[in-house]
Length: 151
Length: 151
DNA sequence: GTCCATGCAAATGATTTGCAGTATC
DNA sequence: GATACTGCAAATCATTTGCATGGAC
Image 1 (cartoon, each protein chain N blue to C red):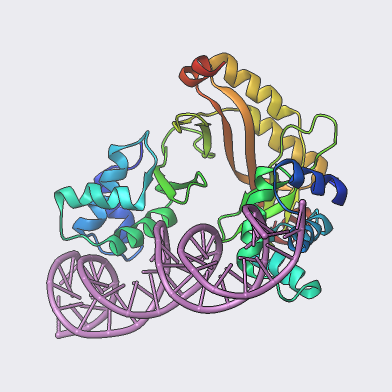
Image 2: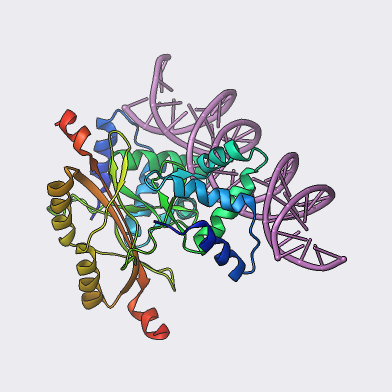
């Protein structure tokens, strides 16, 4: 999942950007938490454990680069923080992302993949002429654990 | 579409809230633009035309009330502004909202409704045990007009 | 050695909040 | 008349930016 260290270095060089310890550490922090959805502040705290000199501004600047390189995805759960997660590159038809199941009760966020959306997109192109390129889907509800307790 | 003035007044009273000119005007501004997706600032400007004394803080406070009464929906297009649109109450099975087609080129936002999502939700409940209550779907791509120009 | 990247602190900008005056009920 | 609502200005808080120093190539 994601790119490895060497691939990232190469991507930076290809773009004329410099390889720095900070940039490597930010990507590593995100790669270390493929299932969580980290805020900039959380990434900052994680990297600071290994590299206390890093500044929050550098984390934000690095996130921008990672977004432009399509190595990470942005998720907004409308809780006042923008979150980031490592992209799932190299899974064959890894074209779409952003499918999240958000538990209203415990706040847990799970990702999922589905083909039904492709069908929906085709239908939309057919009926409205809108050509879908990417999508973001958030489903709110109760996860298996919380659903039992509440119902 | 939406609630009318009298229904809104009653909802406010039921909640122990007072009926004020400002609250009526904010709802009217949103009701007047069912297809646009207004920012707080845009609502503020619209209301100010009729009622120059209104303050931006009052608009924000009223938006909170309207959200709690489920009279409006919040949309986040990740452009730095949170937007609001009047809800489509009274359309029979008006349970779900938040389906948007966002043109990457011209920025135009269109809403759509679809049943395919219901199918997807059932599938998710069946396979993961997650009980979906609401959803938000954003599809990014090129609208009929922009698609032609680019392809 | 050149130039980009970093860290810090200050700036930004949407949203919120405190408070004294004002309107609703 | 009591209390909730408003407008204003100040506060908040995530994110961005300016600038001088430091590091990559």
